[in-house]
Amino acid sequence: MSGDDDHGFASTLAILLGGLVFGFGLGLSGMAKPEIVLDFLQFRDFGLLFVMGGAAVVSGVTFFVATNFLNHAPLTGRRYTRRLKTFDKNVPIGGVIFGVGWGLSGICPGAAYASVGLGNVAILWAILGMFLGAYAQGFVRSSRTDESDAVTATSSD
Amino acid sequence: MDITTLPLVALADLFPRGIAQYALGGLLIGLGVAVIYLSTGIIAGASTFLESTLSYVSTVPRFNRVKYLASRNWRVVFTLGIVGGAAIYALALGEFGWTTNVQWWRLLGGGFLVGVGTRVGKGCTSGHGVCGVGSLSQTSLVNVGTFMVVAIGTAQVVAAMGVAP
Image 1 (tube, one colour):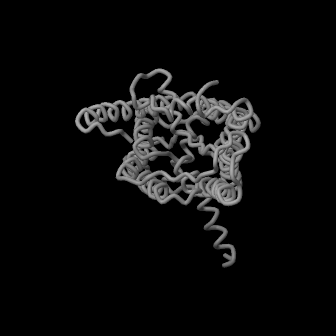
Image 2 (cartoon, rainbow over the protein chains, first blue to last red):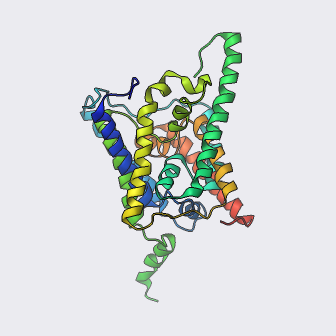
Image 3 (cartoon, rainbow over the protein chains, first blue to last red):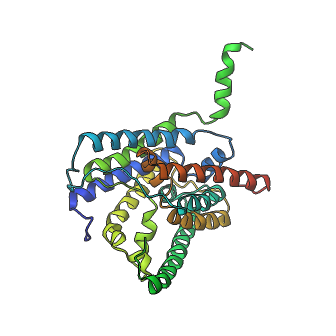
């Protein structure tokens, strides 16, 4: 392994372990099944509220305790921070596009990877679609940045 | 009918599969985030994997920014963990081999829009929905509120048009 965010074998193991628990939870909660997500969106089963609520409560308590009472992560020395992305018009625009896609397919990124773990071969269509969508967005965004850079020489993002 | 049973009947209608596996699954999803965060300080979202993985095979500048090159290895590990964790669940509870009946064009088209939307909107159901909401980020709350309302509307329209599953 190489890269600035790699901090050795212990970090890799911790991330793998976290991923395993995360994926097990996605399987158990039913999020890995598009049918269950679509049942929620069609008001036939409100169980998903407990999935997102339960997950957000655990992460919320964890973030609160770590940012207020702890300093550095033991395996990396990173400071504990909250996830605070800047707001701009892309946030609701992206939300609308994501919402149409989620409502059409019943699939989001983490749940799609977990669905592979169920042996759900059909989900590869969704994963192919997600990579194509991310590639299309990145390609268009890069092209635009090149144009604006040529004119204004400002940095992107 | 005994009047005291009415709320229970209504509750059963809202949760035809019960709530236990939903709540427990949600707690485990949060616990997975917590394990990674407490040990490494990394806030794990699932969707950046798309861009960071594309950096292995694409020369498009957008995918080769430092933050993606730096994080792409652990994101592969995280994603393999997600696949493995779901596989352990499926093998342990005898569901392995379950396959969705949702039609391929819904998965492909919906996946495409999810891929675009999550990159434009800076996150997905785990990044914004779990980590961002857990951080009480107003940006994430706006994003989640938006995609939730739009997804409900979309699913209702698709169902009303007679598309199933």
